[in-house]
Length: 461
Image (cartoon, rainbow, N blue to C red; front, side, top):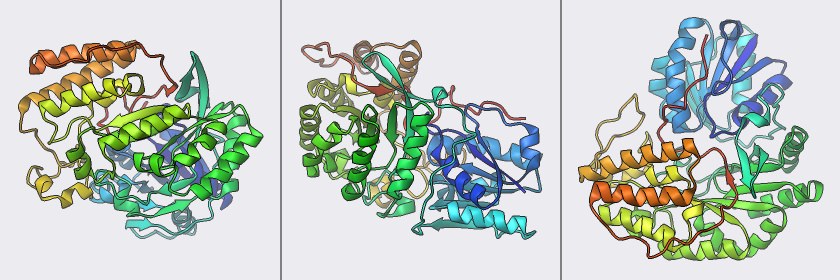
């Protein structure tokens, strides 16, 4: 019986969420076809031949796109068993099942997906329902053999050069409980390690496929320093010219500052960090466990170690007043971050999905509207309508800027003009010194952002 694994969107990375279960299923004897539907059209033959279809939904955008795909899959193959898996699957299970899924899985799903295939192959119908599985799996090297080549995915742009970028993970889940994070409802403060040799084998395969840079997609690379350090040491010893980027929260940059020199020495050129806000009250509501002062210290530490920063923000929240937003813009300039912030980051609006820990706050419950099954969020309106208008205008400006390749400094100046138009004249930085662009990835989107017009499934049937 054939298996069809589908990814709808993974931030411009070759989808590990397909490659890992594909390896497990093929080891068990399944014939597996992997389709990255953001790049490769689905065909009626592929769908009709599949007895098991599994769709990866690791983030908000991917889930929204999967919702549009599920009814068409179900209509095309009524007999197939359809699974949705990933962080957003259990949290949106009722909606995904109404759209055509038979069951929804979260967490460490490879073993369970394989057992579903085995039952189907034996002529049994697996039980429908939902499950979050956090078993400690002995994960094996992913099988990327039928995924699109790396040159179709995001690249690292550094010193005017585009490097093919691979993607892997050394851990899953996270030991922190940030209120707005979609990892928390599934892993609830736990994380699982990927075996060292599995990670290194995956890196070797991607280097052989042309990768000159690796993105480590762990929610936080320093959840387990004792696990990751031997991996980057071994990787650097084998591939001394290979660069990499990681995601690290501010709290960990400060706590593990002594590790930054070794990260840089082993090839780390870029750290992604979810600063989220420069307002301490908002940071406290998010339970980020850092302050604006901590952010400044973390930036200084990264600079001292010659590691670039890709700073991410949730720029628009119910508590983002006109003054708070202008302070954000001024603070980004004051901290020397203009080249470290992708334009889209200035326009991201807080999403409150199903299961969000933000809903534990009375002030959040007081402002949200009933859950929207199409948008997959609890909607909210800003008490100042001008802020909602500004957010949409900023996002439109960011999309145009990315489309035309505008320099980040130029975008920032246009953004100041836009704020003056929408909110009235306001303060500006005394100077905006020119800064050289640092390394960055060519896919500018973000896991907790709304999908936009150019993000769609390539084709279906």
